Length: 228
Image (cartoon, rainbow, N blue to C red; front, side, top):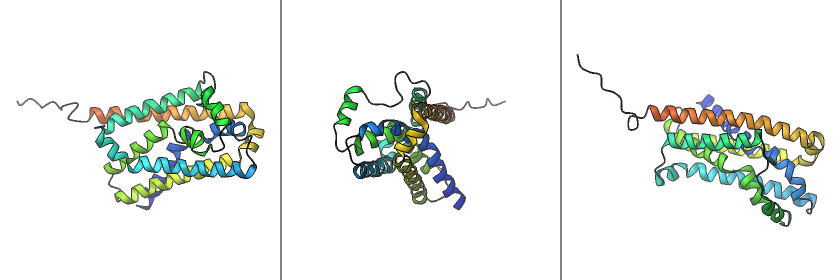
């Protein structure tokens, strides 16, 4: 059981970190917080990571209810989540304009805001549709596993979310030094590597969803062997 706990925590971190990808925020944070003091910038980053953990934990706990309310099957969620994650990965790997997801109007509004912790930092940068789809999928997976009690499984995923938020906080706290060391080209290179991993994760989600769908007797009735 202890191995299952650590596997769940580490798996949550590995699944969420490429999607949350705080390095994207590193590229835009200096511009968004140029009018703020160093102490206020640190407070905004800390609050953004709290919001991120709260948003993902909320969708994790409400995942089963959301799926039941909208009559979403586990294969359907995994296929849709895989498509979303793959699309985000393709945009990171082959950016058309810029890797970040702010329109000109939203960016101008963010520059004039004193509080950028919830939006755009926490959402959509750190906890967007891809990471939300992942935690909802994890919620459904917890109900299907029997390696550990359900509450312990939820606690392990929450611990993984908290660990991801902590890594994001460390990254954003070091935004200015990282930007100076890596530069625009270095950050873009790392973002593209993360995009490749996201595509792999999304394709695997899609494969798992299709596999579950093909083994679902309500979707693919098993042929009854003809009697001799």
